[in-house]
Length: 353
Image (tube, rainbow, N blue to C red; front, side, top):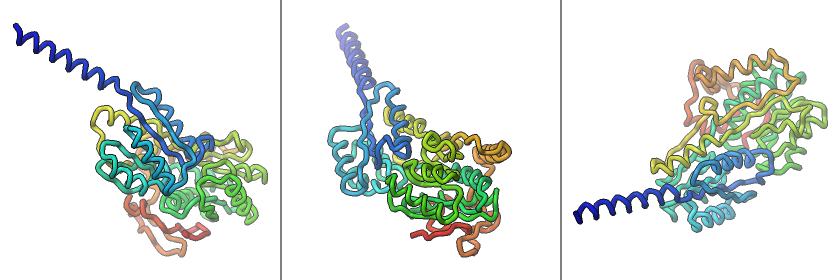
């Protein structure tokens, strides 16, 4: 009898322990390179963070406008010391600082966006935004009349170069005579500088402005000049409604919820995740009213081919800027080459430095 009572007591204690574990709040931190009000990159990530707030047992926090380098290491370390269970660092330059902090806090889950380094407790992730950039390039190629498209770009790293190339390939499917002129700003978020860079491209004859920047500055410059624009990160059409054709956009919520669920379940393992349109992580913003229906139909057909896996963006033949064959006919460039891409396709005007 006594054994039975003890057994029942142990079962009750186990039940209480399990209940407490289930009720324990998971604290998730985010580090952003620009203000969440940028309407761009950080805003898109913050929408994913807000989706986590809807999950039971999850609490989130963020620090915005954190410079890459020592500042980011300090912020990440502070979150770890405060007992955050998961920390997402959402800019390329946070990679090495996060890796260093991850070595100091083995029981914390660290996740780095757009990088390539991992550890036992640190994974990395990104989205195949180049798929949506290809589609937006198709729209730009169809809408230009000068055959010159301007591209305001942040840093000459593979992520940005890959996007410019995909955009150019998409534009060329609609207009083989198009050229894409690139100006580097060497900043992720500087509205004034981004706007001035766009103006310099407009002065060079561009009648469509695209961007890999966080603010709507380039699109505002395009509208002021009466030409078209392609946005990035989110649907920024409200900032330049007369210019905005479409934009490659992010939807981080499904991925962030998946990661948090795995940590809650105890099934999370460090990995390198690169998801695309098929998984709903990247998409194309709605078309502006100025985009003809036949252009929309052609772009949407290509989108469905990408989702079904029937269309690969970097499938040969593809030549580099100098006209030399870089990808042979019938060859699909592997992910390892895409992740290390440091060359421009034919039709891009600019340097990779």
